Image (cartoon, rainbow, N blue to C red; front, side, top):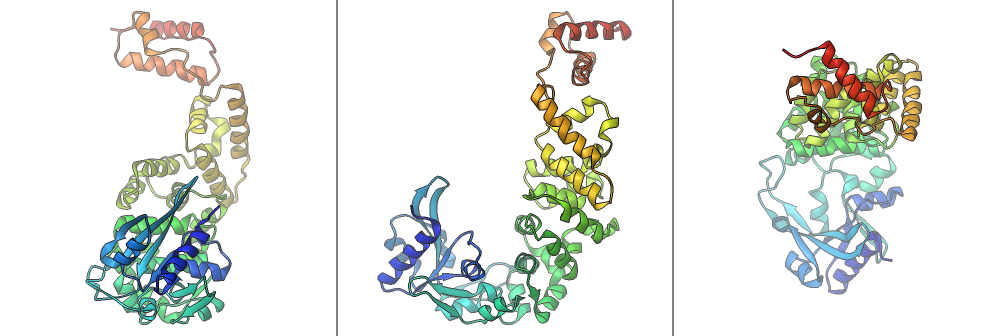
Length: 414
């Protein structure tokens, strides 16, 4: 069965057999040299986009103005294999902090010089098994060093997101940052605000969900980026050491909402909501982060709370994240985790017994059948019955109706 790597080899072979230069480019070359399975493969070629489209039966012009064509391969269980093929190019001036005003088709060397960091500027021919290094990326990888290609101020001026990517790459690959590159990031850190919220959020997700997220946080601080991305943390006087301890205690794998909740746990709900909206998170992600922060300490006293408070938290779709966050917060503060352990055990017991989130004993129709008219009291009666059911003080619909009658006697209508 053809996998993505084999398909990427075939794309290069097809282009070369048609008389064009074609090489693997960028991150996939870096990862192969580091012994890490690449997440995807990119090909750079001397072939123009229209030629690439003629050579392959199924393509998508994903970046026609920049010479990028996506080549589709065989279908797998996860979908079609695909490789992005980009024509060698050099870029004109950048004025929007992301896109060049113009491009010029060029050669491999010129293409390497326009890229961000030397470790991402490498090319590899998988047919001849030959590495092409025009920027010193192989030496920097060997030295575990992150260095901008050429003038770092120019590289970061071309795309301000590279400021944040520097922190992520340094953390992910356990690199030091070359001094002039690091200083350029610090000097230009306030320009990160020019980047779209969606791109920042995507980069943060990659940084904060990686196992080396604590080192990523430390780089954000060192490069003066944390206060730009999350000024609320600075205003609230949150200690970075506390954030690092919480992030470091999260179990793998970590979701983005969980990591954000650990990072923003000292802020009030309004601030957390505002940050999520500023980052343009999806409604589901925003709601999950806000809920996790709001409930972050609730389980610390779980055994003192009524079951009708604890059970809905443990039946919530985010319960696993809440348990992980609660444990991380306790461990980071040097507190016992007995309450979280108790919650995990009781949750398993209640799930086995079918009492964690049982079907309601009464519905609104049952109340209507009893002659109770809709109104404020209607909802209150259903809530009281549900609470009693979750507290395990009633177990049948007969007991639920008796509780309704008792409640009506205690609180007669006007």
